[in-house]
Length: 226
Image 1 (cartoon, rainbow, N blue to C red):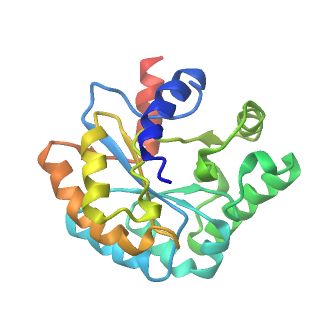
Image 2: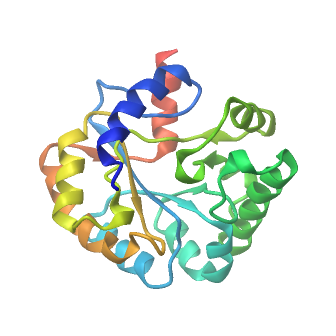
């Protein structure tokens, strides 16, 4: 069963309920954040980076610590190209199932792995996207206590079930708007198609006049509205 039709509905409910999370940027700027979860992958992520280089756009990578440790050179390539790095946990474990101590260790271990790969200090890597988008109010309270920033999404085409590249692209084009945060995957699930999907998607978004930015830029837009 595919859950894609439910994500826009869930988004409309969750965004006003949890306003301290980043769900998107300002609606009056033609900026969007293209993000990738579950990597880096030794095969899929380098292919993806080539596409991003081709179009000279900036993306956001929410990495698993275990994958960072397996492919530190790729993480350095992501960083050196000016893309934004965030945390997706050390393993792909649902955060609400972890104790506070386990969750803190998961995030800190991933920060440490990124530092070892590309020398980004922990205070520069504090954006967190919970695996499967699952969190509780307690999770968010812990993020605030530990000085992490929760980053969510507004466009989720469910690429990990591989419905087809054209289908994924069409789903994104139907939902994207100013300030959107798009979620794709460059890990084991969905990563097989990520380079081809991005190759097809990006020129169409550029043709619509969108500028690709980091989630840090979207946070700044959010601050400017306050």
